[in-house]
Image (cartoon, helix red, strand yellow):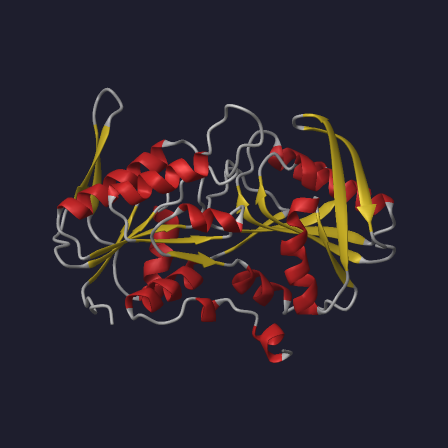
Length: 320
């Protein structure tokens, strides 16, 4: 049995402090004292301002752009390792570079694997994240990975509504598995939107596979970046007779003209988590917090209890 380490310390990176503060509120203890010292040339240094010797240390930092967020996380981990922390967990609500999970053309980097190597080399003993772009990224690590699922927070949001006329859809073929999880939980149909590109970032055609006539359609995806695919899918679904279209996306990257596209689109609502701070507010965008889920996962990790139990589909398990 693993040795139980009683002293728990939670620290936040500078760009994820907004989420970390909510997590520690649920957890029931304050954030640890951490200072990021910045020098005139732009270089910075992580300085832990309290003892972490022998402690169970959690660093909360999403690695969205800019890449300084990733570097800051690496420096914090290195500082804790050199200060003799007992066990270091990198809590990465949004794992950046996850879309670079394979060589899809010659002479390109596999960024997700490189980042996994960097985090492990820095000294992390464990990773905690949510909705990786591809499940196989867990295999890039040679340390344990706790992969949380956003269904734990989005299902609760949807279960407060009447879903009798709802049908779930994936905005592209790659998101079919995610959408199917929702369809199975709520015992509804599944629709697939198949996109065809003539060149990068430009969708030439969108085909809807399935019947959406008169239905309230909910699109499901893990990342919304420029919102091009999602908005095009919403248009295609409405053209096929959908009554309404909403979307649930875990990570609100929302780069470039994304928010403006959403506001002008047929989407009536976009529900996202708070793994990334919203760059711009919109009346169509609703944020559901992941803080309670991460707080419970951190506690279960420290107490050597199951993480899967926090997000497993109990309805699906009961039907087996």
